Image 1: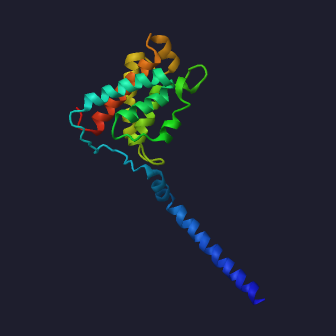
Image 2: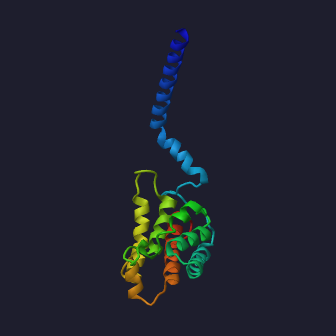
Image 3: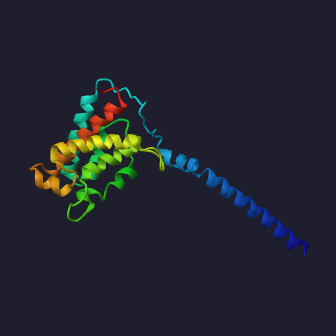
Length: 197
């Protein structure tokens, strides 16, 4: 009988400890999750961030344009191509494979009839969100502000961000659309977070 009582007592202590552990982890879940998500070592940028790029701004912008054009022409998939171009052109954006993979289904408006946002526009947003977005439900005003600047470029150039509308309204082919979007997004990011003017 004593063995059974000891077992029940030990089991109760274990369950009590486990419950306390779950509650503590639940309360601190955001911190634990953030530590896991930040394995890349990337520090999210904010309005006060200033990265010294010397006089390389125009070179970085041209590289983003060239890579965007080349990747789209060779590999296709506007969203993933702009993500790759921005990762490869801008030193402070890590070439994160998870982010790249997330863009793999967003080309052509992510629809069979091209009726949603251009993948180059969406991919730009993915990079902007990666660079200055927030954790769950934080203040996203900065990322929206920068994305609206990208939108202004699309509206001025194509009068739309919808894939089908862009394709129909211009003779510009997708490699050029990706290249321009990479250029615009790079300019916006450099002006916001670096010494580029």
